[in-house]
Image 1 (tube, rainbow, N blue to C red):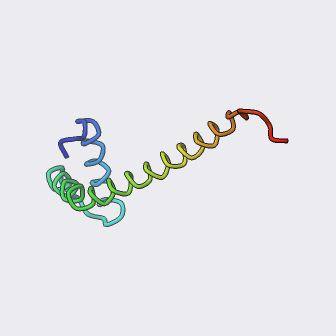
Image 2 (cartoon, rainbow, N blue to C red):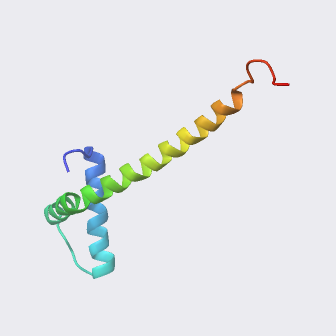
Image 3 (cartoon, helix red, strand yellow):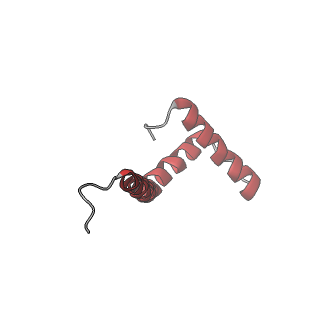
Length: 83
């Protein structure tokens, strides 16, 4: 979880502790919450990252398709009309 800023890391750890307290009626320490978050990042991170890449790819493909349509609409007829 080194890629998170200190404030982000603290926020996530706090949310894990809050979840355990509210949903499971358990107290979990900061170290345990940090370890759980680290484990989840390692296990789920690649799946979430790959999904984000797929979503980004679809968005870019849509933008390119729209750009292609926009460029085609700018084309002008060239040459002489056939008789």
